[in-house]
Length: 270
Image (cartoon, rainbow, N blue to C red; front, side, top):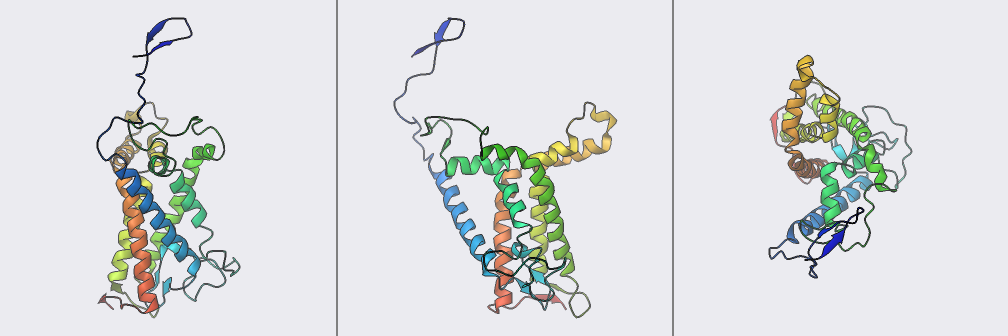
């Protein structure tokens, strides 16, 4: 056991001098590796789809993939632009360029995602009781990590985008030719929106916005009930984070498959 000396000159037992990186004998490297592979695969798929600029809208049923929502490029196909078109149609600019940066920043600065990619990509640290390979640690006090402090603002912007996705899902129940329609695509779109709201509402910033800075919950019963509800969701934040990655990919792939004619939408009504 080594000894350390504090600023007052007193000595005491310090941390054990262990040459090994870790004394863990389990497969501690498996979770960060799995996270690394899953993130790389998802980012690769999402990047390819965002720049394909096709197979994103099913005009017959009004299905719009969340990867292209809102579609605001002048190249968007007819019926897919619910909020107007004002961006140029160039290959390097995604059709949903207005929303994608906010969604990316919201997830990059998310408390859970920070833990996940810090461990999986930066090995800082890769797991509990495993030493990290970095000689220095500056925390989130320098650029670009200091931008993590803006997470609460990205939360508000992401909430607006989720509202847009909700609008898209509801609008898809109205058939372009008139009348009500219900198909498997509608169910997938709604399920994705429900999970997105679960992830957004379970965010730590949402919990702070709802019940933060209250000294007496008894004087604010409505906000207290909201805070309690959000707090329960917050315990499942990591599960919602992964569930929404899966639901976004599934929703996008289904819309792409129907739009490309690979499969037909399973119609229930209309």
